Length: 199
Image (cartoon, rainbow, N blue to C red):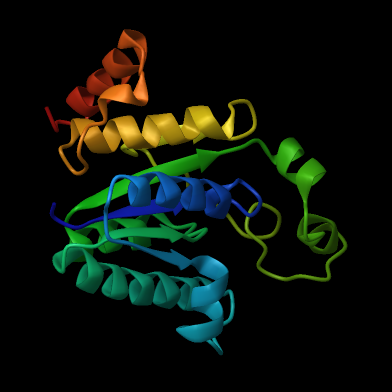
């Protein structure tokens, strides 16, 4: 199989990393070569010293995209989970990588603030964190993502199924007969990809 990049985008706490790890497990079960570039780990190892201004965020996304492009062209199923709040930077990442599947982890702000496992929203509301996406900095939702999951209302299992079905429909991963998708699920994915001009 050829490589591709799954680009999970969404606000802090929207489930990008959790969903990315679940998809990683599913792809490994199918015998695929998988690498995960988690946003926090990239910040620590590839983008140390960058802040959270728009310029620094765009630089971070550009670095992630460059690594993803190398992995993708070498046949790796690459998964990245990064807030990547700006559409233009994500569009440039798509252009750099080529085989790019955008997964928008949609979640309403009330749910995100209620979850807040690291207490970041609370700190941002108190003015302790500057440039916090969704509070003091904008998040620009994707306009035409290949996959949209609502992590505030659907189960992780349902979200994973959407991602895997999309990858199968695109021919990026082998189909698994025992996956047991419903015909409605398959029709919804096919309709979305048709609307996006893939099929």
